[in-house]
Amino acid sequence: MDKFDPAKLRTKFDGTSEGWLVHVYSGDRRLLCVLEPSHAWMFLLGCGLGILLALGWFNLAKHSPSPTYTPSTTPPVMLID
Image 1: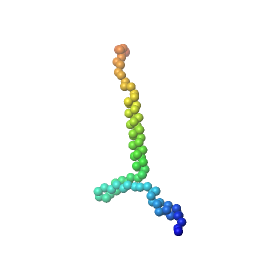
Image 2: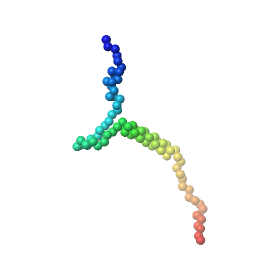
Image 3: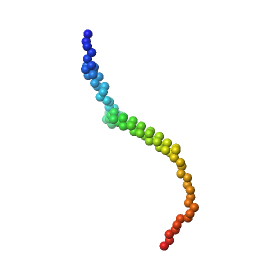
Image 4: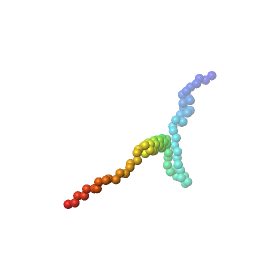
């Protein structure tokens, strides 16, 4: 009976930890752009920060008192030479 060797298992599945790439091609098979994992992480980070900013802005606008206009009762001072 063969003994279990974890080194053989590691070499068999080594390609799974390399990450991924998405190549986007046009209709005439020219490469338009390449999307890498860092692009996806930055997109998700931007979405998360955008949601936090929107929620904070909404809460600040909801709880802040609306300014009321009070006209001045004294006339402006006119300085004439």
